[in-house]
Length: 276
Image (tube, rainbow, N blue to C red; front, top):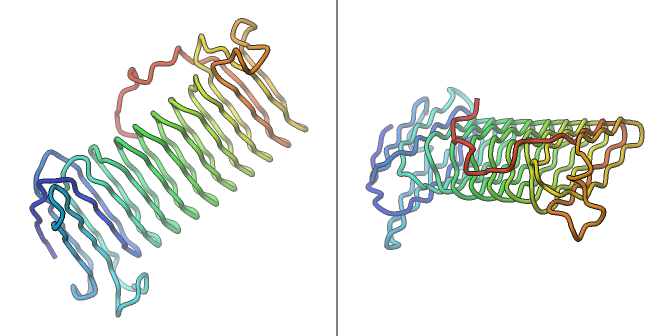
């Protein structure tokens, strides 16, 4: 099944695919090209394109076998899309994997066991998964992540970052805003943070946070049985919250805590190469 839609304005893309793979490629184009492979019956797909609003289009792609969402069994579905730059993506899957290349406007991803990978998002990224992994390169706005056992790895975040995970690891590179993370047994790693507040709570996971050089930081660190190490010198520490650029609060039960120096904060210096 192949279809093409004229999309000269802002495109909102909504996907509900139970299993298989979804690939979205954003590029400089005024058309949206859709290709679906592996389907049993094209009538099982609901594809709705709405261009009633001036300058805005909405495309919904949903698989509903016999009218039941996620009742699909059989050959895996593969959905390939070429879309305009800046597209807003909302994707809901059971176990389908999502891969996004090129620059998009925002991303909302919800899945049971599907993985998600993206390159460059201008706005916000919100992901909620059970066991799927999330990997991304650049988020211009805020980032939020909730998982039972999936890992999250994002290279660069311009806004605030928040996340919860039971056993998955969380690894963030440069974060431009505040950070609030919580895990049970997953490890937490933050490459560089420089402003606002950073709060991390873990039971048995290890925590490592890089503080940008030159940042005055107020430290509140505590572990019941784990080791706590700070490489910051006295010139980088603030005796009170009022004089600090960054309030850093980390608490674990048995996990180790390590606070290290990172290079001077420069969000713009980070490149937007694809996540590995």
